[in-house]
Length: 212
Image (tube, rainbow, N blue to C red; front, side):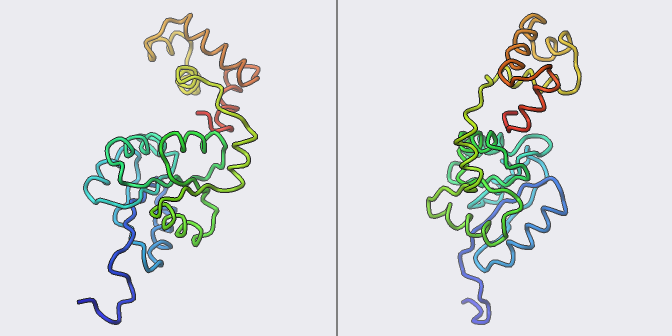
């Protein structure tokens, strides 16, 4: 029998919390732990730890940051959708970029919120996704509708990501198993689509819009 003095419900929402910054992760866990119907079942600091942790702990909801070592939260969401479709996914990010929202929805996420949202709003979002609702930051939703779709192809995004460290075309070609001419063509097209003046500016613009 339950202790009559224990106000916690018998069935809590079990949460997997994935966030690479320990202070932010611990603060989120503490805030969610104050909710009587929410339990942080497991915490991870890397995106490539999400799937194994979900298999081991059986969460109802995975609360994922986007930018993590090992694997992004968006890629982890795709894995969860494929391997554990019963786990609901909520993307939580510092960067309210329309492109991120589009990619999150394509990955199968049920909710997308920015980190400066009130704790009560986050807790409410977890409850709502378990009821089958989709929860999106309203300001970001409007921005996504007006900003347009990501114009970059998967290969163009790959090349832009890889060139961010200043690699030469020859180095990019070797890393991506492409010819230098193909790399040059992808970069040229990506620069045109982002209306940038050079590859460095193309990377910056694409990141700012959440296309990478």
